[in-house]
Image: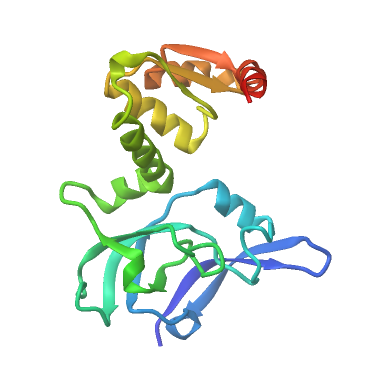
Length: 212
């Protein structure tokens, strides 16, 4: 029987966590239509919360974090996918209460997977990861109602994953971006991404509180 490695998190009675690399087999994986060999996964804030025992993210331990994964299908019970297909899995319950991408294999429902887009490698897919996908969806929605010449766009939490991708995408599309962050050391990074202006987070928090 094939054995593979997984990053396992166990929650102790006292609330502390133990994290270690363990050996697993396919029998340890949940039921699902697709058995996928994981090539890459990205590190997200939710993964950090899950790995530290936050039960708002993960209520069932032991647990394998990793809320996204990119890899190739090994076995398929779905007419939509065949062995050898390259796929991305992001969202749904992966890495929350379903063991996630921080292991060499995952098994998931076919509805959780999407084909790897042409021109994108598995590595690139996870460089963008869930944060990049979320940012792209947000910018796509915004661009359908606000044109680049309509005025500046404020991106809060700009030094985070979704925020930094949003700054970069909006700048590339021609928007004037005001990046807000509580991290002064992130200013040069945000300027390189294309932010036209960097503001302290507290300033805009006060303004929004007065508006609402």
